[in-house]
Amino acid sequence: MSDSTHKVPIGKTIVIITQVITTSDQLNQSLEDLLWYTQHDDLKRLVGLDVEKHYSSSISSTSSIEKVSAVMLCCGNYCLIIQLLHMDSNASCYLSKFLQLEGLTFVGVQIQHCLKALDRDYGIKCRNALDLGQLPRIISKNKQCLEGYGVVDLAYKVKQFHFLHPSEAQKYMQ
Image (cartoon, rainbow, N blue to C red; front, side, top):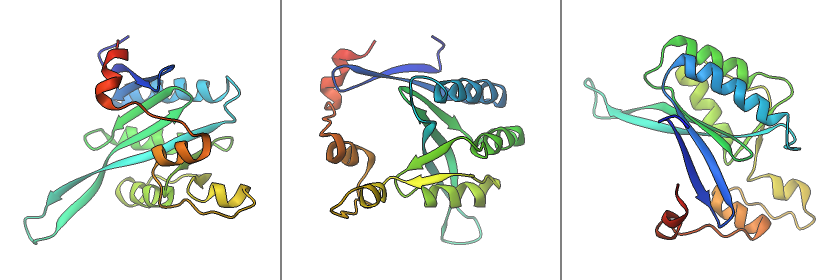
């Protein structure tokens, strides 16, 4: 396992393999690896997507400037944290091509905000996206909308899955 790869326990039996990507070359290879994951283990070709934003102050005004700094992509127990802010333009091209793949669907909570920010900051667009907050209303009979919930809350609502407290998770770290 490289220095940029980490194992993170979730619950008592699940270990998430997380890779931090800082260069375009790493990104290209890691996206190929992630695509492989989507084609195995009956994962239905779904990829979780979220962004992290960086805020900086503007010299010419009192307002702050927001820009996507990182993109998180997950499939099964494999996650990429792509530190996009300081990468070259090749990174945007690689990520844009990946998000345009016809057979993949990208899912997230309020994903439309993530995609608007990626388009605004890097010109990156996504072909297929699904907001997880809308999913329970679409597939359930009670029409309950969970769009205000975060990923952890949705996991509990849908599967009654309990996450460990960070102090408890430390004993499972490798």
